[in-house]
Image 1 (cartoon, rainbow, N blue to C red):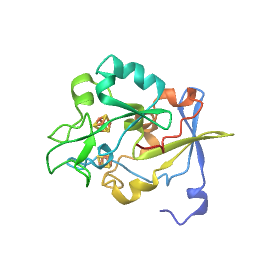
Image 2: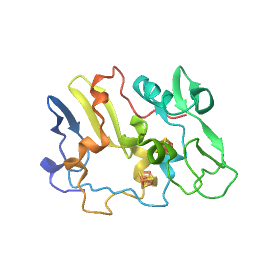
Image 3: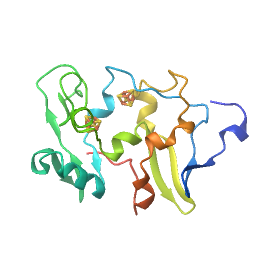
Image 4: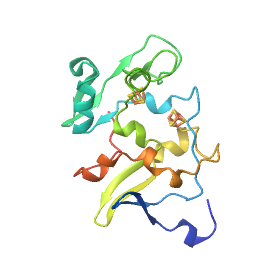
Length: 174
Ligand code: SF4
Ligand code: SF4
């Protein structure tokens, strides 16, 4: 973290034309997903409405999604293996035995929330805010292990649909 307060102040970054994000994380933050760390795939993934439409074209929603508190999530399922699972032996329905995402690999697509991680987004009156998720500080192994500065690649983390959502809050889990 920088010791310069001006460096740490939120800053507005244009991610797409006329689509700005208020960045609350250290602009020096770098990220590269680490092979074998599948921590963020052990959870039930929040699905926005647009994700549901996309997922319906690629998978059986009845078998792979579930309702929780009025929202849709990808199901967590018992994997019957020791690797790439949470403490309870479960993980995202699309997480393969080799630790790769079958949706990403075989259908060239993944839910919005999977793109956003390890960041989190929420809306305030001045726009879409983005920061590192609280849980990522503890569990994500990809923070500050490369020279890929997140602030220079925000379009890779923040699909444009986030600006169109009434409630883009990504900090909702199954
Ligand atoms: S859909 Fe794919 S990327 Fe997203 S949590 Fe599941 S396995 Fe991981
Ligand atoms: S927790 Fe971080 S490093 Fe681990 S799989 Fe997820 S994004 Fe990659």
